[in-house]
Image (cartoon, rainbow, N blue to C red; front, side, top):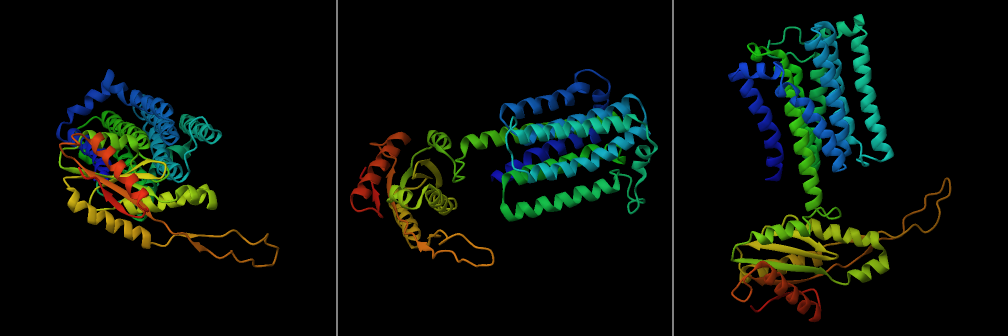
Length: 413
């Protein structure tokens, strides 16, 4: 459902813009006629940069800089100065650089806006924008000849007006992101995929489907869609970071609280605790402890009878809306047994330093037994709200631990 939401909003914005421009050609004239609509895309991209900096979203800051600089250059030479040759060259270079930069930004890990890497990348984007402005302003003949580099698509339909190399680059990056999305099912990949699709549109502004519209208005309107998609991505990424536990990628305590506030009886809440987790940390180290937490989280992510949350430390919570205790206890016990029977291996350290030309083997791996204790409670007259049910489940959890661990205990009331 989340993936549908993350894809639907950007594509709906793009579709709405297209429909408006096609069905009402006069709408683009408002963007080109001056006033607040004419300056709206510039304002939106400034907001993208400021919002990205505020939430420390380095990727979107540098993309905001890139889109802003390219839009200014194309708008100035193609529309303000009416220099179609220079403007066409700027359009061609921007349409080539945007998919390349999108792919680079996607592949590089985010380091923070004010980090050395973040500042260096922002400076690189500024230099790209300055170089595009400088070369376009030089009125070099090779810049003006760039838009004519169409060989395979010379007879393409009139509604395709994207430069040929740019179209192939967009499709190549689109294919790569689609492959990564199928492989990883990552929401960030989906966001970049939708952003790339929306980024193609402004470079097709002089398509025949907009024949009755203002070219400048169409260009600015479609670039505004890109700014809105960037803003959407920043807000959703920041909200996701606040709601998601970074270690296990499960919803965190804040998301649990919001879910609990919306619960309507009947429902059950289960508390899960990893047995002897402190001993695991002390004996095998915190890195192994983190692996155990991720291992359990992966088991809990796809349970069919509720939604799992990272409560804190080695404790997890399952909220099962519209379930009753008698139905949920057997399922929780089945989950407990599946965790107990699963294999978790701890790899030993190397026996010694590896010498040149030798082949030292890793020390033998050891199997680490993992068990959990579970307490569950149901909403009732004695537990009239979610906080009371959670407290009852917590008491049942401690009862399970006191009765020998690796078991499920249900609250009586």
